[in-house]
Amino acid sequence: MTQNDARVEVHEDAAALSTAVAGELLSRIADRQAAGDVPHIVLTGGSIAETIHREVARLSPESGVDWGAVELWFGDERFVAPDSADRNVGQARAAFIDEVGVPAHRVHAMPSTADVVDTDEGAEAYEAELHEHGPELFDILMLGIGPDGHIASLFPGFDQLDVSDRTTVGVTGSPKPPPERISLTLPRLNKSTSVWFLVSGSGKAEAVAGALGGRDPHEIPAAGVTGREETIWFLDRESASAL
Image: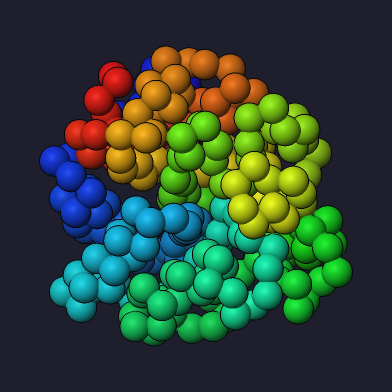
C-alpha cells in the first residue's frame, strides 16, 4: 500500500477526534477477541494520544474488551529514568492502562536508563522482546506525527531511516528533547495490519499534506509507513487544513 490508498477522516476538533479513535479502537479489539485472537496494539505518545487514552478508559466499561487478553507495545520511547514524566509508558499507565487493568506482563515497555546502559543496548533488548513475544504483524499501530513529519523517534535526515536489518534502533541527538530515544524501525512499523495516524493542530498541517502527497520518507518519515490492509489518518480540521 501507499499513502494514496489511505483513508482520511477529518473531525471537528481534538476532542471529537479522540472520542472517535477511542471508540474505533475498543470496537476493533472486541472484534478480534470475539474471533478468538489476542490483539497486539502499538501505542504512541504525545498530547493527542493522552486525550485518546483517557477516552479509552472512559468508554472501556461498555466496550466488552477483556484487557487481560491484549498485548500493548510501543513505537518508541524516551531513554530517561523509569519515573520520568517523559516516558510514553508512564503517560499511558496514568491515562488508561492502570485504570482498565491491563496485566503487567501484557505491557511491553521499552527499557529505561535503569535497565540498560545506553540506547543501543535498549534497542537490542526490545528487539529480543519482540522476537520472543511479538506478532508477525501488529494488529493496530498508532502513530503521532511531528511538525517536521517525524514518526516514532525517526526524524528527517537521520540514518535510522535507512536501517533495514533491525526491528529496533537507538537514537541520539534527537532534535526534539529528550535527545536519547529508542524506536522501532520503518520495516518493523510497516509490519502492521492497520496503521492509524493520530494528528491534531495546525502546526502539523504541512507535514500531513507532505506525507499524504507522497514526499520522500527521508524528508517526511510519516510518508514511509502504511498498513498491510489499511491506513487511516485521523485528523482534526486544523491538521487537515493544508489538504
